[in-house]
Length: 179
Image (cartoon, rainbow, N blue to C red; front, side, top):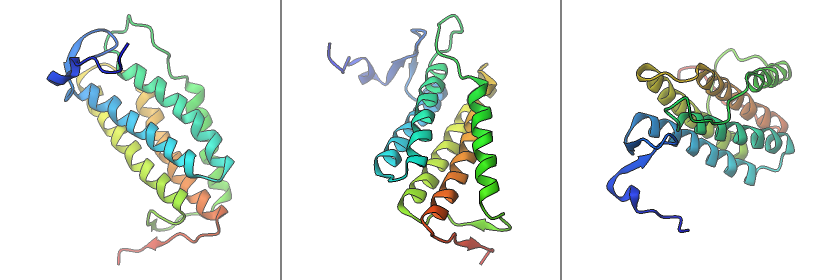
């Protein structure tokens, strides 16, 4: 079997339900953004030298496959893995732990710092874009609200993870005070 089907040459694709839609469909855009985020996390994992970054992000990648599967299925009768609420709680617990270990923020910080933290900040922005697309999709079609909650927490988690990486690398955050 070939990787190419030539079906997409016309600008269409099939959802897991078998329904054919244009590749510009908001649902395809939403799970495409999730896929982009997942690939970006793979890049971070490949370049990071911190196991405290790699291990949790591998789990997040697995979660994102579930999110993508749910988004790529318009028909609830098609069985796909479901995102577990426990994963949201685990992200919240990790965020809370990092928040305890980091200095409180009183101003915005500029994205950057170490190479790994900079990539995590970029992944965070991709996550926020994916979240916005999933929210837009939810205004048109019924989706599992846990997908939005998960992506929202993941964006927060990535922000805190970037801060934590900079702290571990002893790199100061650049504060932005509007000037």
